[in-house]
Amino acid sequence: MDVSEASHPPPSDLATSVPASTRTETWQGEEYTVIEEGKAKILYPAGHQVFYNPVQEYNRDISVMMLRLFAEDWHFKGASTILL
Image 1: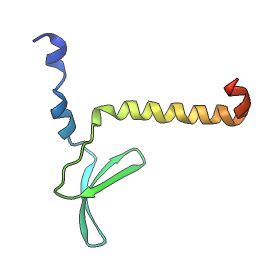
Image 2 (image 1 turned 90 degrees about the vertical axis):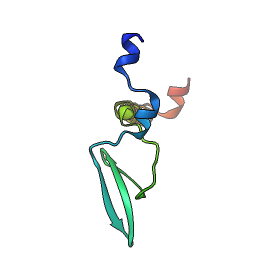
Image 3 (image 1 turned 180 degrees about the vertical axis):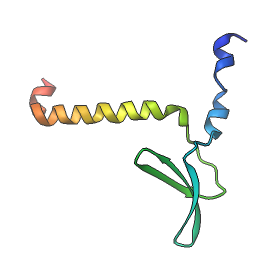
Image 4 (image 1 turned 30 degrees about the vertical axis):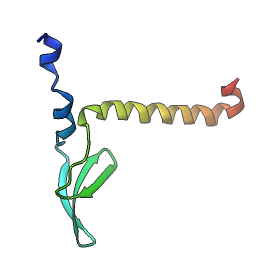
């Protein structure tokens, strides 16, 4: 095994990792697990497993930032000038 394999957990471990911002809440009489990332909240029925990759949080943040910048540029310059 080389160093790169040793420093990263296998994908199955990433998929089951639980971020520190996870808690359980009751909503409309049902128990839910809540994952918070920034301003987003993801609710899923308690006891169920979902795929959540906390390692990709930085990637999602960069993607949102770039989409916001693109939208600002689109609005500022006008759609026709960007497409040309």
